[in-house]
Amino acid sequence: LWSTLQRTDDAADMRENADSPEPKRLRILIAEDALPNQLVISAMLKQLGYTDVTIVENGKLAVEHCQHHDYDIALLDIHMPVMDGVAAATAIAPLRKGGTPVLVAASADVTNESRQAVSSAGFNEWLDKPFTREALASLLARVEQLLTQPPPPDSLH
Image (cartoon, rainbow, N blue to C red; front, side, top):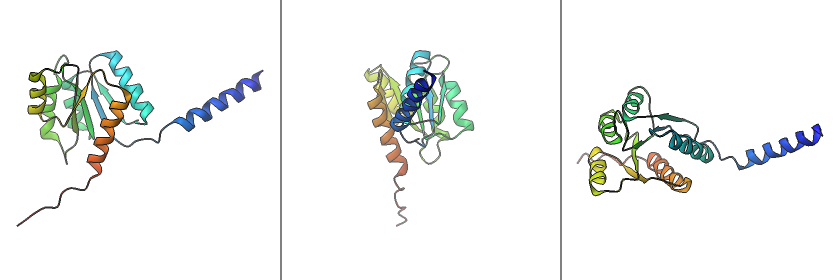
């Protein structure tokens, strides 16, 4: 019986490793106050192969992390306690180096006022909540493409 269980475990490990995506290199910061949402997005990112992920529960902590660490993308919930995502983006914008982190607003709030506030704060992208793993994967692929494009040539005419 033990050898049967061991072979079954080995086969499951092989299937899991065969289905695991290649590790992705994006450095991701998530600011989300709701623990269930933190767990879901963490699982989605792991399934997509992203392992360099930091999750904080408010915008103030997101700003502090951006002051001390380099991220490729910062996905910020726009409605959080302590400091919301709009205020955090406004504080992070002057810290950006070479366009990073790419700022992504995440919210179920689709009012014109929220969209305008997000646009004024310097966000690059909007991700409707709740979002699917496919929507998240599409967003991250766009960010990866944006970050791998060569910078435009300088014109000194």
